[in-house]
Image (cartoon, rainbow, N blue to C red):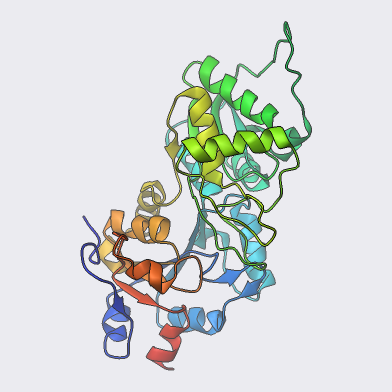
Length: 344
């Protein structure tokens, strides 16, 4: 069922319509980066806003494409920022990857190779799977010479690719061989995010916050940028290229000639999992996010109400650009506008 805002211009949340939105929703889904916080700093009056929603009986769930942390690590972050959020209220793309394997009866004797960080490894282990790779393989190298056999584990049954600031040729080669040579090996992407909010404070869910030092590897990334759409030409303060999770996924797409199973937003997998857990109609859910192509599309794909906040990636001019064909039901500057409009 299409989202209500699809095909018409978004409505600014105001005093005369906020109550209609509020009363029609039982469950609010919140993105984190650019909505709840920027880096290690909460966005203005988020704490009071979440408290108001809970006091009015609204259920809150936090859904993020950032795979660098596990739910346990996210719960610790919420706590460090003074927010009381438990693990059951958090759905990260790292958790979604583990749950995808779980609900699809991934064989317990098979292993998972991770091109990603600790969040994915943690969730795989919590789900009972044996995971290889991750940051440790970022220290390994490949010798490209004749008669040099690159060994890989034949029992790997899935390769999971997410944001990885330690990506290198070794990981790409290992993941490629697993997918190409291990019969039935799954290729799973936590997300294909192209852009992140580029500030000093905010975590970049779609970008690696490091600079490439290898000229050869930089040339490879430039090749991916020119040939695969998930790599977007953006620069940080120093004018240096930064690579997104979509670039890492595209690299494996290119070497394996296969498309991944995407478990993060805007894929419906996380939504299907949420609907089963909460047993609620999508008409009673509102997705709140700062990205049109992931958060808002995620909500629309499921038939949820959608609220765009302009405190993160998307600007008002981008929303109102005639070329933009993703329109949320509502938009506002920041989450705490709900607090100010609804009152005590």
